Each structure stands twice: as structure tokens, then as C-alpha cells.
Image 1 (cartoon, rainbow, N blue to C red):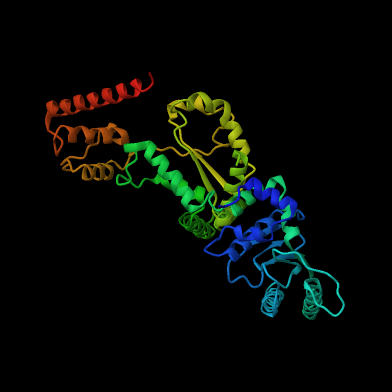
Image 2: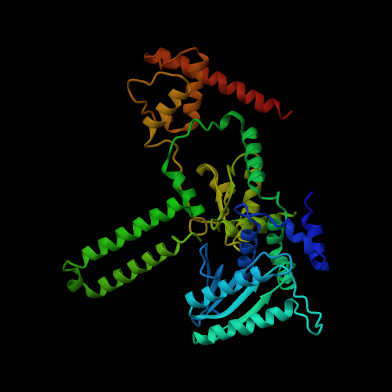
Length: 446
């Protein structure tokens, strides 16, 4: 059974945990990859000079798992090896190859950190070579290689102690919870939570009744998915293309000042688009773990709060939503999405959370997609599609369309009846169904 985060943290503070590295959550089926991810996250939290940029990498990595591009132009790279036992010739050769590759491919490298989850043994016995002795000899060799390339590189070692010190800090407890508690925020854990919500929602969730709507693209943006990044790239390319076309006209000479301002604004937009293209327990501990998970995957973890206006939520969120949003601002790898009916925004959304604080996307049901929605729903309920499109505004509402189809089915009909009498019968059945559901809901409260 996996240790609890509290026990694990205590073990780390007491420095008795050599075998606890075996509890590291595998990533892509590999603890080596998981160790690389963890070390990168720790490196990204190191204090550096202003104007620095952190650059994580994927295999093949040219000798560095990731690096800081410092404000001075120099680079601080990291190499992580998940070696738990004494290093032999094979392990030292791996390090030699990584260092040589890093020196060849990163000519601005000024600092190179090697992370291995074990401290250096250093008994200082005459005529014997231990870890510290071999490390010092390797640093001399690597320094010589760097000087041959006219480079001055500082080689440093992150062992168990150097890794545990930052992990015991409060700000990094989320890393501990995520990486050393395999069950929390795992794929299985996430699936179980989703299945619980599906069971609670009941028949209101029907995956077969999916109508592709433009509002879904907002979630692609929150997750920084490949589709979203490709779409941004298309917008950027199109904007640059239109800008080049415009420069061939007479506007450049007619209004030069305004044109320079426009060109500057377009460049800022293109840079902003480009910056988003590169794929970017207590409640606090779980939030930190969620942030660590988002950082590890390279996509923000999506935290969704649906239907703020339902139940007791409409009495709570006005007082607590601002605090939730403010608390999440410190986590760069968590995206928040909330939903609320527009008629309830005044009593659920605080005034300070306006459109600038919380970007808004309006979901207008099936408006503009009535034909596709009707066909999808009628096919699902085994109904014959109407010969004339149902363009009444009520059919923009997914809930109304669901109840309409259920009413037809309950009446034993397979198509929409013609005439006022037939429609009246449907609406009577719909009203009866709603009264029944209202009675059930009200009765469950007493």
C-alpha cells in the first residue's frame, strides 16, 4: 500500500528514504521519465535573474532535459539520471555522452546540473575510489572538454539531499503529493471521479446526444490543445499575410503615422499568438498536486465548476467565488472554467469578476444549429425527422428538445403530429412530465 503524503513528507524530513524513490509515479510507463519531469519542475522553481526563460525539452534532448535561458544570454542546463544503485562504468559513460552532447549543442551553456537520487559516498579511504572521488574526476574531465570548446561551465551535483530540501518546502508539497502518491490524480482516479459525476447526473447526461457546437472550442483554448495551437497558428499566418497585402497599397504613404501604429499593434498580436502556440490531503495540497500534474503534461489542468446557479450555489458563490479565483491565480498550470445561467449572474458572480477578470463565452444552446440538433435527437429517440425544420426558438434549448422527444416517445408516437391539436397533446404530455418531476424533487426535500 502506498504511503500517505504525510508519512512520506515525514520520511523526507528525517532523510530516511533511499528506497522511497521506488514509490515515484511512473510517467509514460517509466520512472526515469518521471524523475526527469520532477527535476525539471524543481529547476523551473529555482530563483534566476529577471528576463530569464525556462525551456523544457523532450527526447531527443541534446544532453539536457531542459534549461534556463538567463537574462544575460547564458544557459543553465539539467541532466537527470534515475540511478538508485552504485554507478558503474556504464552509468558514467551515459553521463559522459550527455555532457559531450550538451557542450556541442549548447555553446552558451554556463551551468550544468546533474541530478541523481542518491548522495555521494565519501569515506576518504586511501587507494579507494568512491562516488565523490569519481565525481570530482569527472568534473575535471568535463571542465577540460568545455575549455577545449572555449566554454566556461560550472558542473554541479543534485543528490538526494539537494532534491529533498526544496521538496520539503510548503510551496512544493503539491509535487510530493502528485509524484509520490500514485493513486491521487492518476488516470484511474480521474476516471472514477468522472464516473461518479455521470451517475449523479443520471439521464441528463447522454453522450450519444452530442451536438458539435462552437462553444466547445473555448475548452480547447483552456487546455492549450494541439487543435487550439494549430488554429492560433492559422490566425497568425493569415494576419501576417493580410498585413503584407496591405503594405502594397497607398495607405502607407497617405497616413504614415497611423500605419506605423497599426503595424506595431499587429506585431504585438502576432507575438502574443505565437507565445500561446508552444505547448505552455487538504484542498491546498490537492490544488498544488493538480498544478504539478498540469505542468508535467504540458497542458493546463482544467478545473470546471458547472451550474453555479443551481442548489445552494446561488447563495454561496457571491461570497466565495472571488476568493477561489484569487487563490488559483498563483497556479500557472491550472485553468478554471465556470458556467452559470445569464439570468443568475447578478446574484452569483461578484461585480469585481467582470469580463476583464473572467473572459466570457456565451453558450446559446443550439441556436444556428437547430437542424443538426433536431436530426441528432430524433435519430436517438427513434423518431422520424420532420419534413419541415423546427425553427421555433424553443428548439434552441437542449432541455426543451429533450423533453419534446421524450413526450413523443411516451405518447407512442414516432413523428411530430400535424396541426394544432397534435401539438397541444404533446405540450400537455410535456407539462405532465414536468409536474411529475417537480413533485418528485419537492417530495425529496421533506
